[in-house]
Amino acid sequence: MKNLLTIILPVHNEEENLEQLVSKIDQTFNLASEDFHSPFLIFVDDGSSDNSLEVIQKLIASRGNIGCISFSRNFGHQVAILAGMNYASPNSIVLVMDSDGQDPPYVGIDLAYQIVQGNDIAYGIRKQREGKNLIKKLLYWLFYRLFSWLSMIEIPLDAGDFCAYSPKAIQLLCSLKEKHPYVRGLRAWIGLKQIGIPYKRPERNAGKASYTFKDLFNLATDGIISFSVKPLRLSVMIGLLTFFICFLLIVTYTVAYIFDLKFGYLSMRNVPGFTTLILLTLMFNGLQMIMIGLIGEYLSRVFEESKGRPLYIVSQVLGNIQSQIKYE
Image 1 (tube, rainbow, N blue to C red):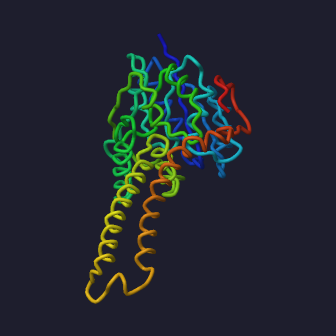
Image 2: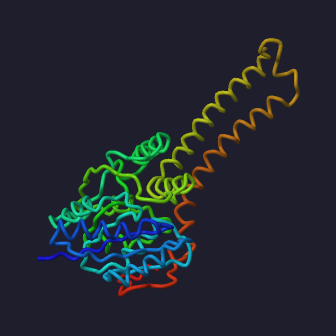
Image 3: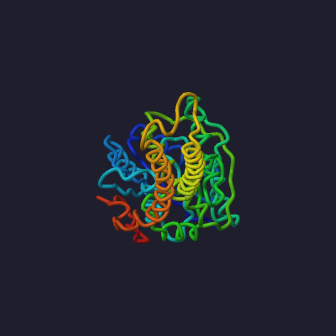
């Protein structure tokens, strides 16, 4: 029995890669898989400033079995993934791939087959990255391990957005109302039956990556803040430690003042008001650290949810697709 497969391809300034990518997908899936012959493609144009949308329109006209969601502006890669999920067929296995060619289609087939075999989520694990400079590789390595340590749930190491989902998993992900979604964290949070598939991540086919260090930093920040309160609790711990140190210094200065102890040639009584000023400064600095951490603990949980803004705005939809789960 043939299985229905939808491939979601977020796009941001990838005009040089799209035709080659579609050709590779068709060649790989049509030759290697009777179950997933000619998968339906959903491009999500995330506010591209080049000719990506025009290339997608040509592909729709020539290949067919393609849809495209075009955002009114750039809303971000993670939002584009969720938007594509909203427009996938309700009974379809969904495969998320980058549109720069770094996610090999032959690995995508393996991920999709894991769903057929009963898993709800099958994600790619990047065992090796080609073409990345050493600094960037190190930053990726550090982030995944820091994120895993900080997170309140178990997050697989080195697992990106290259992933296949069952219809049940898609329904659950689209029901979540995150204002700053971090998809690889959300899929770990929903649980279900998951499996990781190691693969070697190649270089992009052409062009330059649109993800800058700033974008990567923002993505990392979204992931940590969305799935961990440890930084806030760490601030409370630092506040308590600061207050404890301040308390010891308060005792030290008080004893030195009462008994007129000297530090070298200096005495607490030499400068009127010095001891009082130091004691108050130390005490209130420690208290402020504690209170800032406590306030942040509560404020961070209501701030984003109070805005009530839509996650994204669609300017046009190309091809024969329609939103199944009205997430916008």
